[in-house]
Structure formats: C-alpha cells, structure tokens
Length: 462
Ligand code: GLY
Ligand code: MN
Image 1 (tube, rainbow, N blue to C red):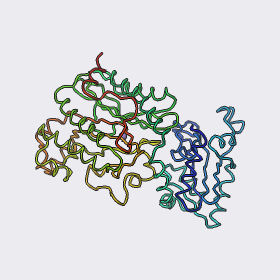
Image 2 (image 1 turned 180 degrees about the vertical axis):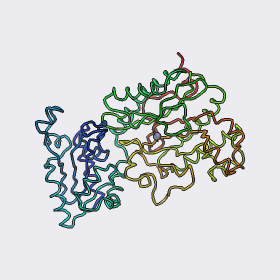
Image 3 (image 1 turned 120 degrees about the horizontal axis):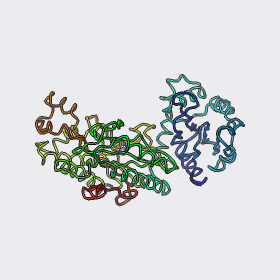
Image 4 (image 1 turned 90 degrees about the horizontal axis):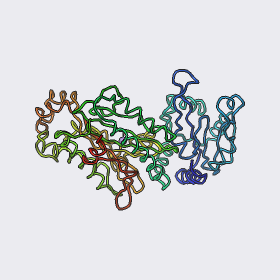
C-alpha cells in the first residue's frame, strides 16, 4: 500500500471533476470456486484500490462530493473470523492507513444510501462487472438489476479515466517492478523452451515465479506453440523442433500493478530461415512503433504504421502484393495481424477496461473503426504524457481465417493465397513491451527482456 496521502489526494482530485452527490466504490468480494468457503485467489477491484488502497473484501468506500467527507463502511472481524483467518487491523486502523476517519458498520450503509436518495442526491457508481456487486448495488439503490449497469455514472467514469490514465511516479515505479518480475518469468520460459517439454510445465513454472514474489499473474498465462490463437490458454502440447513458442505473460506487484510482455522464441533455441524472416518483420514493426511514441500522437496512427511495416515485410516475402497503403486502408493486412497494437496498462492489465473500452481508448475526436482488425484496437486516441501503454504487433497464420478469406475471394489483389497456404503450419509471432509516454518521447519500462534474434539465441543456449 502507498502512504495515506496518496489516497486522500486522489479522492480530492476526483472531487474537482464532479459537481455534487456522492460516489460508491464497492470492494470486490471473495469469489467461490466450487463451494462458498473454497475461493479463487482474491483480487481487489482496481478502482477501490486506486482511491481506497485496502486489499480486502467486505468494504464500501464512499466519497461525498458536497461535504468533502470520505467514508469507509465495513465490519471489524469477529472471534470466528480471527480463529480461522487470523488477526487483522481494526476498521479504524485500516481507515487511518488510507486517510479516512469516518468508519461505519456495513449495516449502516443501506440507511445512508436511502437517506441520500430521499434527499434527491445523485448516487454515482461505476459499471459493476461481478454479479455479486451488481446484486449489492441493486439492493442499495433499489433499482431493477437490469437497469443498474446502464444507470452507472458517465461523469464518474470519465473522471476516473482522466485520473487513472496519467500515471504518478510511484505507479510508474510499480509497473517497472512488475516488468522486472516478468523478466524472470520470460527468461525462465526461454531457457525451458526445448523439444520434449510440455507447455504446461513452463506455464506452471513461470506462474510460480509470479506467486513467489508475493502476488500472482496479471492475467491468465498465454503460452503455446499454437501462437496463431491469440489468447491461447491451452498448455497441453509437447514442444517440437521447428515450431515457435509464444509467451504472453506478466506479473502483478504486491500493490497490484501489472506487467504485460510477449516474447516468441524458436523451440530448441535456433531460428530457422522462415522464422527469422517473419520475426524480423514483427520486431521492425514493434521497434518503429515504440520509437514513434510521443505525447500527442494518435495510437491509431502507430497501429496503422505498424500494419504498413507488416504488410510491406509480407510483400517482400511474397505473401502480400499490390500497393501497401491501399492494402492497409482496405484492411487486407488483418488476415495476418488481426488485432490492435496495444492498450493502456496499470492496475488492470487492460487498464480500466471495466469502465468501457471506448471510454478509455476513444473520444469525440477519434471513434473506433469498424473494419476487421483495426476494430480490435483498444486504444486509438492521442497519447498523453504519463500514459503507460503496451506495444504488441504480431503476425499470425490462422488456417481457418486463411480458408475463409480465400474461399470468399477476399483481397485477392493484396494477398497471395498460394503462398499463405504454405505457412499454415507456422503458428504466430507477437512481441510486446510496456512503455511510458513522455513529453518528448517514451521510456520502455523494466529490465530489458531479450528480443533480438541474437539475444534470444544466446539466452536459449544450453
Ligand atoms: N496480454 C494479453 C493482452 O494484452 O490481451
Ligand atoms: Mn497486452
């Protein structure tokens, strides 16, 4: 946890964005796996963490935009809790850790909200993404549950996004620490990626590294020889010579800031010619995109620039043809690069996605494209100093997509389907780093993880 002033300052900053009423910030509850007392690893809600810092269930934070007071509703542990789970600080102590002196029992919350509603005060809340939180809000606000999500406060959503998008120095340090742990995960995966090993042995080992640092992974590990499946959580293959292994994985710090890195390596540690050729194109697109990051540039411009490098490289290999600008404008590159260049990151690996991707990544000046491929770009708008984003281009050979587009005769002027057929056994390559946007440029965060062909082959030497 950070110092108490960090949280009071954030709540005070939020006050500047809202005219009146109050805002509810529900903590996440424990989430049962197969019966109530057998729960998944606990993860606090990121907005609660941002404004109220405490990492435990059963709490409700309230910010009153008129009185200037903040409240924490929650109960001290009873004897049973202490016997099974151990001693925890009192609510008063917890409140003190995050700069809150108004502590109330959870049983007082419904009356408090009803009182505010009866006085005609606006009760702001963010869109709930867990069903138990939805039920809690339904009861507190007294609305039909289907209206609770749509009834969330756009003013609060916009204000929270404005604050959380610009990272404080302590947050940048946290993300850098997350990448440092992630370095250990990726370098371990690289050294293990030799023929004969199950993917799950590597995935299990690197998840253990994240856990051994006191937290967990920041999202379920993506690790597969079948890297053409963008989010492949199946780890059942035995690695084979001639294939490549995509690892998209990151750790969280104890304060829950995320790392999110992707590396792709040849099984056995030596790139063959075909792998080298595709890899160099993705690396060029990644380096170009990072080098062009600066405050004020639209991330969609970087995305389309990366797409042109990918299309140009594939043209050199005979997989694409025709005019590259026209091919990218038409969306033909998306058969090979069917996702966006990146997203914001912070307390969430896709930062603030629970507040609505379009609210985070787009605005009145730039709307989301509806073209296949670019439509998946989560962040299109202008970058600002203090944003932390991922840069993660890739090239994939997805047999089902190739078959579909070929059968439809789609983009035959830009795609050489005969050549694409010969890559159907290739898989995919993605390379991803986490980058801070600065006034004049960028800073790649964390300890550098091998990504040139030379550096990867070096670390993978037995
Ligand atoms: N790391 C997974 C993703 O960015 O979607
Ligand atoms: Mn990512």
